[in-house]
Length: 227
Image (cartoon, rainbow, N blue to C red):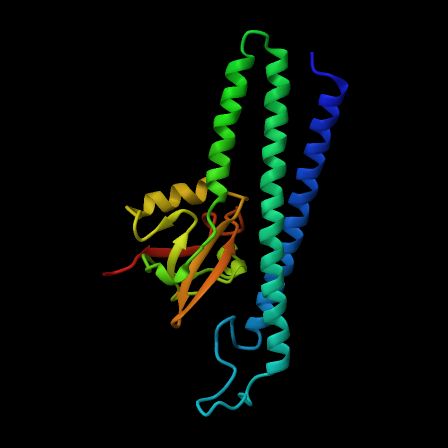
């Protein structure tokens, strides 16, 4: 029978995961607002703020745009960190639940713990999606449309972006869009690192696939890049 401390630990892990999930949603809503405020100035994250002669563009509120871009960059980093914390909290929660279940099952404890270890290995591999060297990556997907207020929109993905890496998928291992669909479904509410090429600039975004008011989990249309 599980001890009181086991049950308390399970409750604590559940509470931590719930708090982190709520904070993630709040931060994503804040990031969406920042992107909307930036778009109201007629620019995104990559457009130049100087004219062809190198002078500040007179048609833009450059100071405010820089403030918004910096805020978006900080918010994106913060969301990435909280997603990492959330992954660990969910990992701990599942581990504690499996161990508690194993204690209650006299003849199945070994199998349960082995299954837990296998599951944890899978979770770990799914989180290792950081782009270590974007300069070596080649585009393999093209973004043809992004729906307003969608998860893709909130992440800063734009029409015309060429995807260099999406989670563990890249030009070397890409086979079909079904692979991308499977990857996105497996990462629902958990986040995916994306590297994109935009106007000759390589950017790293963080996208959280999730249900929204439109279709799918992303709200964008992507196609294999024409060779």
